[in-house]
Image 1 (spheres, rainbow, N blue to C red):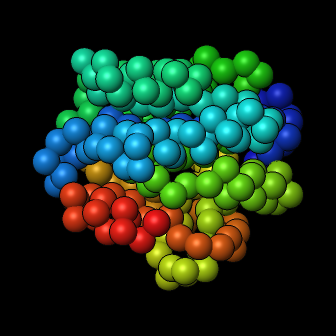
Image 2: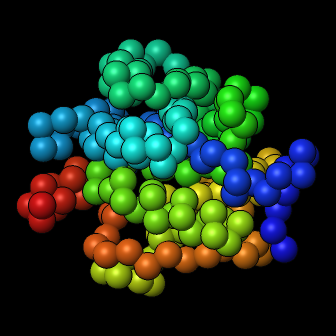
Length: 214
């Protein structure tokens, strides 16, 4: 069944926006993970640049980044790429709080209204705008949430996830660092096959490994 908005419009006929989750403390990294240098730029700038490229191409209508309070360098980095910033003073309580705040911001302050949100993890520097485009295309065709299946890591849940607006209310059920896997557990999702992989960074060793593999 395809989900429809309150106006009777299929959500996938409305614009998609990005939601970048960038409020985590990076405790396993030792703090300041998203500002760690990676190929001459802060780690966060790589995923954000892919989002900005997708916006420039018209794939996305805009983007929101959820950040912790009192993070001026992170804020400047994301603001410079044209993203709207949403502070999350509850970020220490886990990713679920950022997901809820970001979706609320997209639901209340976007024009034209959002039909879907591409949920981007800020610590995945190999994100490509072409993957975002494939997700949006799959969503528009099917009317269902979409996520990538990377050919190099087909058994791992792929990110980012395009969450159809009909499922946004389910974010209210999440707590702590519970991610999208639980939210999507019983919902139909379209998997889009894409090349490569999209690893995330949890520790300094992860970052060094990605530096070496590039």
